[in-house]
Length: 156
Image 1: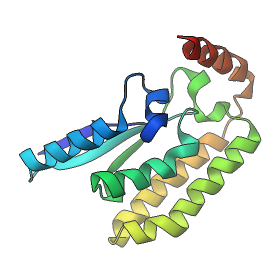
Image 2: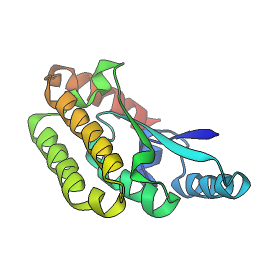
Image 3: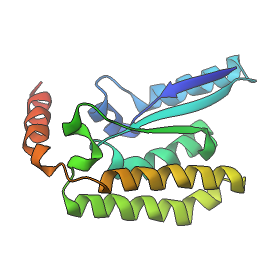
């Protein structure tokens, strides 16, 4: 049996990306699931967007360290709609920063966390794909819409 847990960010940032999310409750629920269903495979579905691509390496590390997730047990998806939330909306400087952070994770953290070289290569390929997707289009013209929506949501 495979159970997929959807998560987009860790710690306090998780509540900023998804209203009502509580990281410690999420970790606790994963632990309860592991105890109740020890033979179940748990995979973590992550939708990557402008809201979380800069902190994606921290989320991947937290999933391994706090949820005992294998790095290969993540399903990474690039958000498509609405397009003003895509990672492609970020300005060039933030895209470069996200790229560096993800490359650093691939080179320095993934080899330590993932002992299976086939899985490590698979995860690395998915992460490189996310970076390529982010950098393949410039949607900064949508940045004012993104900021306006974020400002209104922050006001709530």
